[in-house]
Image (cartoon, rainbow, N blue to C red; front, side, top):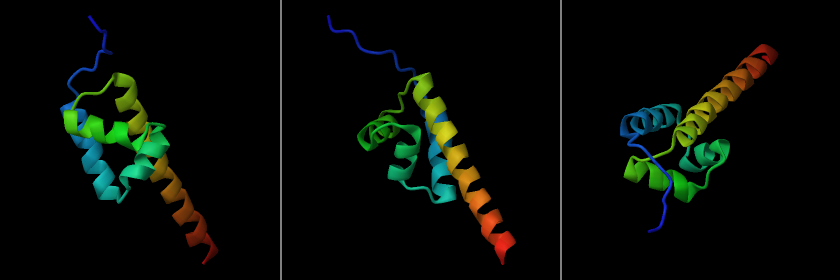
Length: 81
């Protein structure tokens, strides 16, 4: 019998992540890169709704990081004007 990693149903969490990603205009590739997961893995997580807690945590952290970087960049260039 082959062992597979435990991946609980995370549909609700992944749906919230996807909604936030779309609202911020973050591409799939940008989010996957920031979360340090492959694009194929991110797509699989979205379609299956199953992800480890570490993967969900990485995606949430990546969204916050991207959002913070964008805000800091806007603040920096806004201050220069």
